[in-house]
Length: 259
Image (cartoon, rainbow, N blue to C red; front, side, top):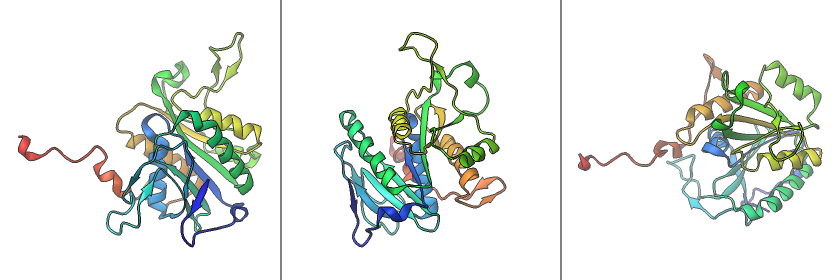
């Protein structure tokens, strides 16, 4: 599934002390934009391309450097930061639903083989699906699978984050409480697979809507940085480096001739 770039091959077993971060293709593209910000700020190196029929093909110029242009970007790519002991998966293309189960199964098998010290999913949920207790306060939430180490769970509690509230299932009779991920893409399926395979997974997510979600991206990456200390913080503001591709987030400015 992974196609290494020239002279970039590594043994997966060498990543045991690394953290793995990936996005969900979810509402507002929060996870993907957050991963963009991490890759740009940490100057991660491209390690491999991801080849699977789930991805609608896409190709474009280097999204992180508009000056040096170090090659083309494709629908899904794997990045690494040896300095930060970090592996990041970025997904840019649309996903074909029929291939999702196969892709996630292969991804989880690979995660199991790598034995990452932490695995973090960045996701988002529809803000109109909130229950009463979620209407006030921070839109940020987190979830963990049962195999997450107690030390990691304690770290998250010390940060005073709010865990995602459960809610009664509308598909089953009775009063069973479940985690509900509306608009979260494959968030629910990946959590279930990781739980089944005993892979420790921490999911960070926020409630949002479509549109300009840069504030939401800064919120979720800011919380992630409080936990992982990836970039230095000055006056409570992390030193992020915005990707070059964000300069034309909503296209080029309107031509002056139209006025």
